[in-house]
Length: 346
Ligand SMILES: *Cc1c(COP(=O)(O)O)cnc(C)c1O
Image (cartoon, rainbow, N blue to C red; front, top):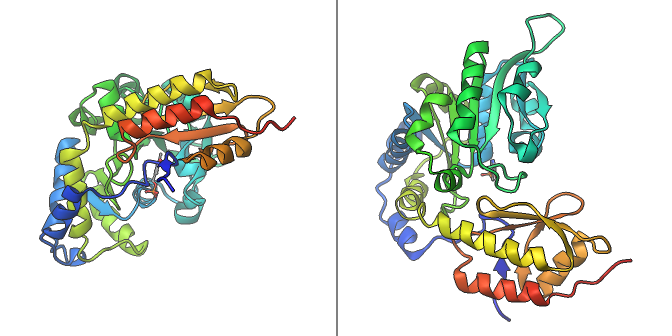
């Protein structure tokens, strides 16, 4: 049986031979004692790249986001974010659980929010209201079909937060996809954000890990919260080495993933079982199924023909391109999509 073409997520990648070699030869120590030089090197590399003071290596993007939210809020505070936000939808209710904060949801097109949307949702100082203390942006927006913010859009949001005394955090799980697409410089990001989460195990292709960036003071506090969350790791340099390798070797190639996503979107546009495809900006393709079809009939039909994807909402399917979906597989997938005859459920 032929190997499946796996478009479920960019988290399904396997380490390359080069990455494995970098991991096997990493110099490690006990990072809870601050003795792992490879972890320190990864934290330094990313904080320098994004022009922030310090970094903290964590097991997951959920953890870096939740630590940041805990750092930037007090119990009874309110977090402002879009209703599509990963921190709100896909982190197990962590904002309520870890930070005892409430959430104010916005409705940005494709999850992209503006100062005009945020401003009226910032509470005045009044005993009835929760204290608005944090805005969270996501770049790229996962549930927005990989839509990107540019720094031009971010700068006025940062200015608003600053003038109102709110912190600004970036869920940058796929920030490198955004950088490759927009041409913005990582170094220009630091000035706008109090915290930035960056995933190494998405498009970058490392097996594990996310880094939280912030000021020295924020990261000092974050170290303690990571410990309390059970995220202090020992010889984690083996994992950090994969992250360093990914930053050195897997950033520019993200442009291929974006190109591949566009090719898949073109094929889907023409398919009879597709109602509409969200415009592709990066490596995520979201499409709505045509009437008469269900997501499960299409998902199963794709699966029988060797393509894996996931549902995202009642009438939407998601394809994500990545390190392990090469040009040959994209060509094969397009052929399969062109010939696919999913069952109609009238
Ligand atoms: C994947 C993802 C995360 C972090 O997920 P983990 O699986 O916990 O690493 C955070 N934000 C977004 C937008 C994501 O897609």
